[in-house]
Length: 427
Image (tube, rainbow, N blue to C red):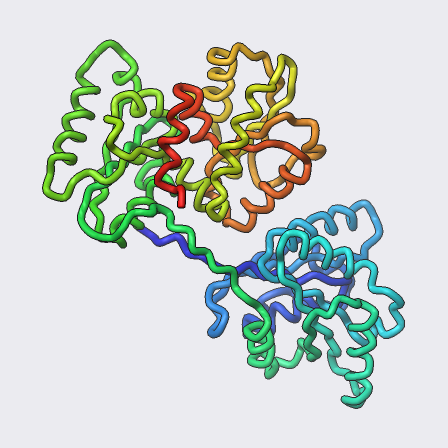
C-alpha cells in the first residue's frame, strides 16, 4: 500500500516570454524539461511537473501560460494561471527585467500577486536578465526600481534562467524564503500501539478491481504505521437492509470478537453509504466514523466544523432552491451512485424537498457559485489538499454553506450520529 506523498506546489506566473519555462528547466536541472522558444505563447496551458529537489523535498511545479495575451484565448489562459496560483503553496512572479524596465506599475503582476496572497500562497519575485551585457550596478538599480514599483516588499532574486549553473542559487533562494506549511493533521488520531480498527468496505459495480479506494488504502497504511491492526470487512448492504438477520449477526460477531480480544477494538471506519446500517448496529461505546468524514477533516486541515455547520443550511431550504453536489474525481457512474442517486433520493424521501440539484464532477468549478443555497462535497480523496482548499475558499467567498457526503449520510439517518462520527477528530 503506497503512502500518500505530501508535496509543495510551486507555480511560475508572468508575462509571455518572461522565462517561466526556462526557470522550470533550471530548477529541474534538465535543459529540455519544458519547451522553450522565442515564439510568443509557447506554453498554451498549465504544464505540471513533479520532481524531488534536495533542500526542497517533493514538489509539484505548475508552469503557466503568459498572462498578457489579450484575446478570448488569452482570457482562458489567464483564468488557468489564476487557478494555478490560487492552489499553490509558493508562487513565483517571473519578470524579464530589461524588457520591463519602463513598466510604470506592473498592474498585471500585481493582480496575480493579490490572488496568490488571498489564497495564502507565498510569493517570491524572480527577475530574469537572460544574456544581458548590462553591468551589475545597472542590473541592481533596475531591480531596486522594479521592487519599488511593485511596492509589496516581496523577496526577489535576479538571475539568468538560461544559465544552468544558477540552479543551486535558485534552490537556496527558495529554501531561505519559502516557509512550508506544517500539515500536522493526523489522518486517524489514535495513539500508536495495540488494538484493532475495523474498516467496513462494501463493494458494488463501481468498486475498482485489484485495489482499494484511496481513503481505504490511506487508512490501512496509517494504522499499520501506528502498529494498529486494520481488519477489513465487506458488508453486503443488500442483505443488511433486508429482513435476513444473517448479515447483522456476521457483523456483530466480528465486532464482539475484536472488542473482547486482548488488543481490543479501538474504532470502526465505514463507507458512508452504510451509515444507515452501521450506525444502528454498532454499540454506542465503540467509536465510529466514516472514510469521507476522515478525508474531509484531513484535507481541510482539521476544519471539520465548517462542514458540520454546513448541515444547518438544510433547515432553511425550500422547494426549488438550488444546491450543488460536487466530486473532484470524474469516474463513470453506475448502479446506485452516491452523488447522483443516493443523496438526491434521500433529500427527497427524508426531507420532502423538491430541490434543483446541479452536479459538478472534475476539477473545474461551475460559474456563479452564489446561486446555490448549499454545496455537498465528496471527501476529496483524488485531489491534493491545496486544490481541495481552493474549492472550499471559493464556496466561502460566494457565501455558500458546504457540507460533506459522510456527514450528510450520517445526519440524514440520525442527526445525533454527527457528533459520534466527528468525536474522534475533535481536539
